Image (cartoon, rainbow, N blue to C red; front, side, top):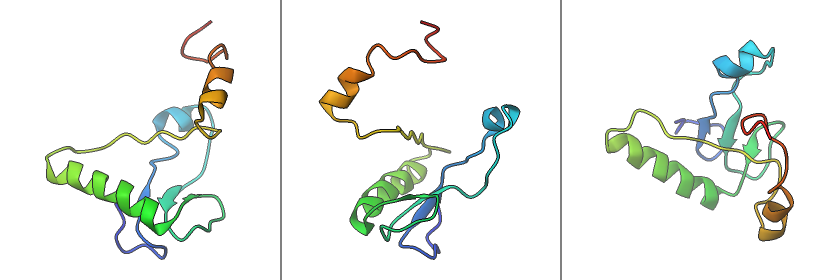
Amino acid sequence: MNPQSAYYLSFNTGYPNAFDKALGRSGSQLMVHGDCSSRGCYAMTDEQIAEIYSLGRESFFGGQRAFQFQAYPFKMTPVNMAGTATTRTCRSGK
């Protein structure tokens, strides 16, 4: 959690994690933040990051040590989700 962000609130996604590094992926400080502008991070409106940030903050106040972040390569509409229902993934092995 980064309340001192140059943007309006932010948190670090943890990329690259150990799995990503083992696959040779690089990078640092991939953040989710407000201000609707970015050069590589996940930017959203200040209102949206305030809601996500508050959920994360409250989870820590409640005793959690972490929260899960997931990013998808498309907008999760019913049509897009249906189109990926038969997509082969590394985890499913199908």
